Image (cartoon, rainbow, N blue to C red):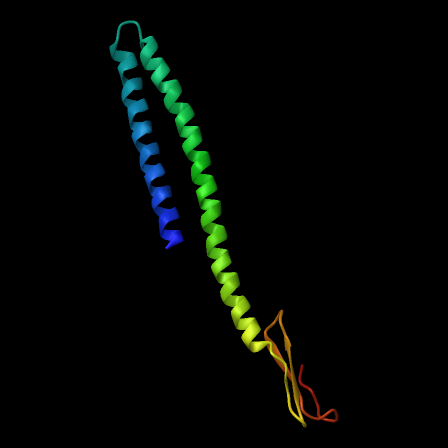
Length: 118
C-alpha cells in the first residue's frame, strides 16, 4: 500500500513536469511571433517554471529512493523470515543440521565418519 502511494506521488509529479514543460514550450514559441521577443513576465514565468522543474525532479528522486528502500525492506523482511524459520538448528541424538545463512544451505552431520559432498 505504501508503495502504491509513493508511485502515485511520483506519477503526479511527473505529470506536473510534463505540464510545465508544455507551458515553457508554448511560451518559447511566442518568442518568434512577437516583435520584441518574450515579455518580462513571460521570461519570469519560464525562469520560475525551470526552478519548479528542478524541485520536482529532486522530489521524484527522493520518492524513488523511498520506494526502493520500501521494496528492499519488504524483500529483506521476507528473506529474514525465511532465514529465521530455516536457520533454527535442529539436533537429535544422531544428527545435527547447521544452516549457512549466506547460502541457505543445510549441512547434515549425521555421522562424523561419513563422506561429505561439497
